[in-house]
Amino acid sequence: MNFLEERIVRDGVVKEGNVLKVDSFLNHQMDIGLLNEMGAEFKRRFAGKPINKILTIEASGIGIACIAAQHFNVPVVFAKKSQSINLDGEMYVAEVESFTHKCINHVIVAKKFLTPEDHVLIIDDFLANGCALQGLIQIVQSAGATVEGIGIAIEKGFQSGGRIIRNLGFQLESLAIVDGMDAATGHIEFRPQKDSRQNGKKDKTADSVLKPEECVCRSSTLD
Ligand code: 5GP
Image (cartoon, rainbow, N blue to C red; front, side):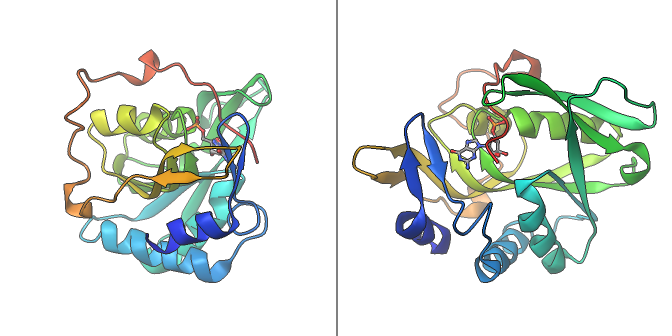
């Protein structure tokens, strides 16, 4: 087990409905030493990529992205969530469905903070169905910028987001991939981590490449 998997086993709580609570160290109270170790690991996994900006989404991604940014020495932009439809034209907007709040959030980034010259690393705390991530990818692509990679703290591998994003050809690096969890026993099953040099290649078990719009997203925010 790596350092994050060990911490999840120690302090994570498996809830009914396939929800993993990690609020004692990751997305409510934050263990900065752990976040720093995660930042160093993202830097190692994306070594050699010409990353000049990190993009994340409020609220839980911000702390992780900011600590990681110190390892890359680049600024962080976070996408704002709003249910308002009164949006001014100088922004990139994507729609992200929130399963928990039963609403559509508009995910917004000001145009001045993303340009075609940007080489972006997207960072977030969780990947489940991939809805939040697809909104961020859409925004980067609308700006004509390049997605250099995606760094996730915890991927729930039994949900579809990871497969969809890898099949789109992105280098997706999840520090812990949970392949199964049981709320009754608290047991958490992790996917053995491949050598990170193999990541970014397409998942050979998947039979087709899905386009973002083909994905039915079911969750976006639990924070
Ligand atoms: P997705 O859009 O990939 O379906 O969901 C990603 C977002 O949902 C994350 O940014 C995170 O806030 C939230 N999320 C999804 N699953 C979980 C979970 O098991 N635990 C927590 N704490 N948040 C989750």
